[in-house]
Each structure stands twice: as structure tokens, then as C-alpha cells.
Length: 389
Ligand SMILES: Cc1cc2nc3c(=O)[nH]c(=O)nc-3n(C[C@H](O)[C@H](O)[C@H](O)COP(=O)(O)OP(=O)(O)OC[C@H]3O[C@@H](n4cnc5c(N)ncnc54)[C@H](O)[C@@H]3O)c2cc1C
Image 1 (cartoon, rainbow, N blue to C red):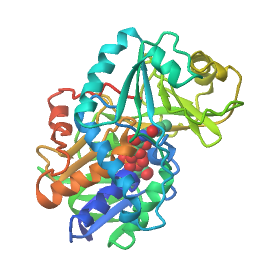
Image 2: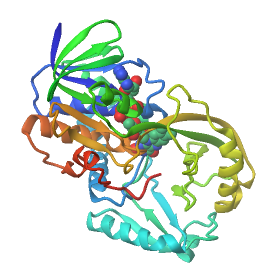
Image 3: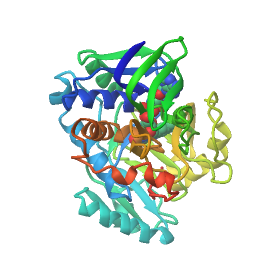
């Protein structure tokens, strides 16, 4: 039976980042990265909207994004002269109705304390800044002047995966079907090809499938797949200054090259666990809910042509829509990196770094991720992020 010091389940952005930073922090033990989907066809990473923001309510989430932003700023230094993830630093614009203003202001204070470059503006100022915007029903908005925008998720994943090839990480193409456990330790990982890997430490980086993987070790993790559709549309007008807009209704829209993408969560009453095989975009959601809201917010979007759509699964933490990071309090060699609920791509490098610090140096050094620990799950004590998009 092969033995690895660390077995990582899931080789997309989170798993790859954990492996990468383990090596960056000088980890010399053996690492296996197990991935069942060789082309990442159904990974949240490759189906995401690949956007990064500083506009969170929880300081730790801001710090995680700031770590990733600093990586984007020195990408070529880190990954070589050819490294390019096409970062468009165009900002987020989070809009609030009258009743949402106190929350927007409270979040803004937290963001300011951490040095995020976010402007809080009232409706007339927003109207002046963005002539194409309708401020009907809007009292204020928070606009990221820098440090926010979107990028190419495939390019980012490729950078990490390519870097692993020279860092002695065993890439194993298989599906994990079982996790062996003896009392307070996980001991092995069973694969669908019949192999069993003995494991010193197991990292769960299985994205939307993380709840099922955790259950293999007999541990409940409230992370489930939630389907999110993304619609691509063409419009006559090209608004080159358009940030990623988040409407108070919860829908978002942003430019993507010469077209636009848009989406939003289902209403809470109908949002629930997705069938893991269902990647069919929800076209009625676009026709009945999203389009009318888009046309209200940006009147030029009354005449648009939807050209295609895709659907992906959020790795959704049902308890509080925040990540679960770090070891299980009792089964301490089982490590979580799960439940990012729509903001995991931008957090992945920071989380990989944090877990590498913990595993190599015994403590978080750059961003204290202890508030994201499993302890809160066990205690049913939410650590809630208010800005979930
Ligand atoms: C539509 C959409 C839009 C999003 N927009 C954004 C955004 O703008 N910004 C942002 O930061 N985040 C966004 N996200 C969230 C983000 O994509 C995820 O949080 C992040 O990619 C999670 O990365 P991951 O590596 O944990 O999961 P994944 O990318 O899903 O990777 C998990 C991997 O584990 C593998 N796996 C699972 N089970 C097993 C098993 N048993 N054996 C072997 N392998 C297994 C899977 O095949 C998969 O490749 C979005 C997500 C979606 C769906």
C-alpha cells in the first residue's frame, strides 16, 4: 500500500493551492493530490464567475482576499514572466435600498479599517459617476475603486497545476470512495481503482462534494452543492466603465469581454441542494426574474440577446455561508478547506497558504483562520458573512 504524509482530496484550485503552499513553506514529506475529473469539467473553479472583491462583512474574509490580491500584483514574480490571469481591476458596485444602508455602512467601516479602497456614495453621486445606471429604489452604493474585479479562472488553476509538476506532488487521477478511520485518526483513503493510500493527514478539498467526502470519515459537514446559473448576453451598448454590479435583489451583472454575464441565487424558498449531476442552466430564472431586474437597473439592458448559459455548483455552507478551514477538533489529522459559498476562488491561494502555515509551522501566521474552524459547526454557532453573492 502506498503511503503519503498528506493526501489531498480534490485537485482544483483549493487542493492545488494547499499542495503548492505546503512546498513553498518547506514541507518535505510526500503529497498526493487525488482528482476524479481530469479536465475539471464540473469543478466550481472552472464554472465560476472568477471575480475578486474586498467588500465582505467579516474582516477575515477581507484579509483572505487581500492575500490573493497581493499574489495577483506579483504574479510574474511568483509564477514566471509568462504568468497572466487577465485581471480586470474594474471594481464591484454593491447597491443598497434605504433599508440596506445601515448594513452597507457597517461593512464599509470594516473594509476601511483594513485599508480597502471602497467608496461609499449616495444615489446622486452614483448617477453622476455611472450615467447608464438607474438609481430607482437605490439609496447608496459601495464602489471598489481598486483591488476588485475579475480574472481568468482556468489560467489561475493552470498556474498552480503547472507549478506542482516541479514540486514533487503526486497527481492521482481517481475518485475517493472511502476514508479509513481508527478512533481519533483518519488513516487511509480508498480509490475507485481499487487502490488504498495510507495517509498521515487528509485534506478535504472536494468543493461542492465536500459534505459527502467528510461523511466517508463519519463526520458531518453542512456543505452541499447549490446550483447557480450564469447567463451570457449581448447588448448594443458597451459600458467600458461598468463594475460588477450587485443589485439589492441579489442579482449581479458584469462585462465579460464584448458581452456581459449575469446571474443570482434562487429565492430562499426554492434554493436547496442540487442533484450532483444537474448542470442544466435554469433559463426560466433568466426570463422571469433576472432580465426584468436587469432592465430596471440598467435601462439599456431592456433590449438584449441572451446567447448562452452554464450552471455550476456552489460549495454552500448551509450554517453560515462561510468557509470551514482547519482541522477537525477531535480527528485532528482531517483538515477542512470547504464551504466557501461563492467566494472560494478568490480565497483559495490565501487558504492554501494558511493551511500550509498550520501544517508546517503549527500556527496560522498571515491570516488567522481560527474563526473559520470546525468548532463553530460542532457548536452550531454561525460565523455569518453578510455579503454572499
Ligand atoms: C457559478 C459560480 C460562480 C462563482 N463565482 C465566484 C466568484 O466570482 N469568485 C469566487 O471567489 N468564487 C466564485 N465561485 C465559488 C468558487 O468557484 C468555489 O468556491 C471554488 O472554486 C472552490 O474551489 P474548490 O477547489 O474547493 O472546489 P472545486 O473547484 O469544485 O474542486 C473540487 C474538486 O474536487 C474533486 N472531487 C470531489 N470529490 C472527489 C472525490 N471523491 N474524489 C476525487 N476528487 C473529488 C472534484 O472533481 C473537483 O475537481 C463561484 C462558483 C460558481 C459555481
